[in-house]
Amino acid sequence: MNSDQPLGTLADILIVDDEPNNLRLLSNLLKKQGYKVRAVLSGEMALSAAKSTPPDLILLDIMMPDMDGYQVCHQLKNDSETCQIPVIFVSAKDQGFDKVKAFAVGGVDYITKPFQVEEVFARMECHLKLNYLQMKLEEQNYQLQAEICQRNAAEKALKEQNEQLNREIKRRQITEIALQRANQELARSNADLEQFAGIASHDLRSPLATINGYAQLLQMCGKEQLDDKCNEFLEQILKLCNRTNLLIGELLSYARLNQVQESCQLLPSDRLVQQALEHLGMEIYQNKAQVTYDPLPEIIATESQFLQLFQNLIGNAIKYRGEESPRIHLSAVLQDNCYLFSIQDNGIGIEEQYSEHIFQIFKRLHAQDYPGTGIGLATCRKIVERHGGSIWIKSEVGQGSIFYFTVPTEQRVVERQMIEAIGHPN
Image 1 (cartoon, rainbow, N blue to C red):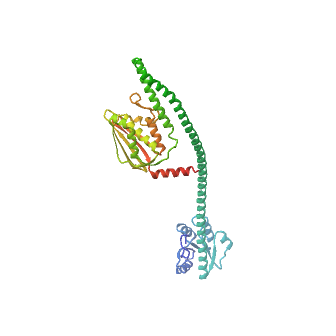
Image 2 (cartoon, rainbow, N blue to C red):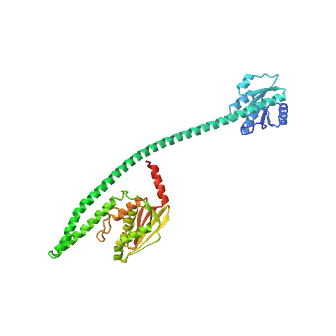
Image 3 (tube, rainbow, N blue to C red):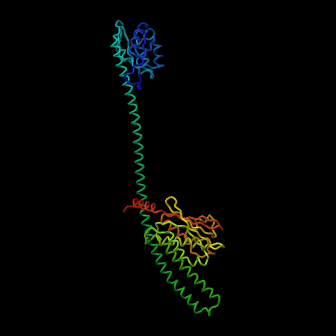
């Protein structure tokens, strides 16, 4: 009866006795009770049989030639494969029987001949049950030890995770503090920048207006008195005054983009495009430009900034025209919770290596051939990124360009606002 065998199942019994008659008698008694019985005539045979197929219990005669029962039991208990098998000694009443020695070598009980059948069965069943329960207990102890080891390992892993989590929390707290300080510093820098831009705008525009005024006065009143070279200088002064005034205005506009003076709202982007086209009416007429657009979606945006965005991108497509009249087309598709806008033209195009360069402030590719300040596309990027999108260009020299930019949908805007509110509670 092994530990997986239900309690009450009849067991495998090994009988060891050098007297065939005794073997036959005891074997028949046990078989009638339904036990599986194996019988051997010597100690050597008993050791071999027990090792090859361990029985559930051994009935072992003490008095045998060559190797007596004590020696057999001693060897069984010293073998790891048979040490758990219960051994009941069998002794005749008239034989000398050392009970102390029997228990000392590992026996669990003894019976005497002639047999009392009920006693034999009772003792066998008792020790079979005890052995079964002992094995179950050992298995449970082993499982318990394994569970304890697993639990200890789990607790150790949990402790390490908690320590790692605490370190991560501290790291995030430090990062949050650093981020707050950086935001505060950025806010101060933005405020200083706007203040500087305002002062610079006023301080620069005032003398610039004076210079421009005197130059115009000279042109009107003294043109006939000046030679061609001086008149050419006056023309250059007026052009530079206008360009500087435009540069100051665009720089001030760029500096003020982060100053939220106008809230985002749901806007029809096709209306913004139409307004941009009205503002660009003269450039469109002079360049004979054709501007078309597909039905465009409603977006969550700041009206003045997105009007400036469309005006800058369309104006840029008109400015950098090729030999043909400009053809410009606007479209938008829904893609991954964002609207993907595209503005395609047939202009001069650019090399791929400059696709990032053109979005940097004051960076221009054709400064000698085309007018401009180098602020327009930098302003476009700042507007798009401020609204949670991104902007890029795909272009090929001589094949035109396509400007792409994304605008989060209304649902994405709400999700972003919720995340920001959770991350930065009041």
